[in-house]
Image (cartoon, rainbow, N blue to C red):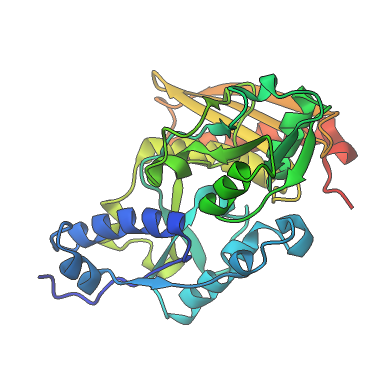
Length: 322
């Protein structure tokens, strides 16, 4: 067994968060010299500490109404800053563009499929929903993208964990719902979607499908972090979050971004929409990474420039709703 102090991991208590955190916990434990298949060894060197966030407690309103996506990270970040935990595992799409002073995203593991999934007991695709059908989602981006394609839909706020949303769909509270495919796959539910949304036509949230390992800035050089870093994912996420930063993005703005890496180059699509989906602004571009001194910085710069272009074109139409 390793002799260094344990790495305490903070995470939300939802089933999905625990599944994601457990994946990271085992990798951290292995990096620290423990047997990742021995639960006792894993817990001894990388204990998981569950922290309930405001975003988990308040389930009856959209995040934009109660303070934004930072409500899924606030209490966990306070624990990091106080020294109660050593790192935190978040869904990257829940991370605001700007982090509290003293904290950083220190590592990003390999990304899961970033696409949105459509689930329904009635039709195969979102396009097949009947006129005026109820679509359930808590995401302003998914709402806007759906209404852009189908302005006749009745989009209803549907929050809660994955099980709760699936139960509401089964109970007939919605004719269809949209969820991140990555979360379903990590929960062993990857076979449930009726269809998947095209990430070019409907770019997912910046960073969707990726996990963020947040630490104190002073700990960014810890050797165990290197074992869970995936550089291609970090480059793609840097591009998408560059756009998020330019657009001052939060859950109050409907922003989608999709980065693709191929043959040493990066291609990125960025879009923002008005909340009602009536207006959509898209820009896309590419950059060569093989010759870049810092591929992550080159990716971030591309994202920021495309985000700025979308912001300049969209103006007040993509500002958060009052």
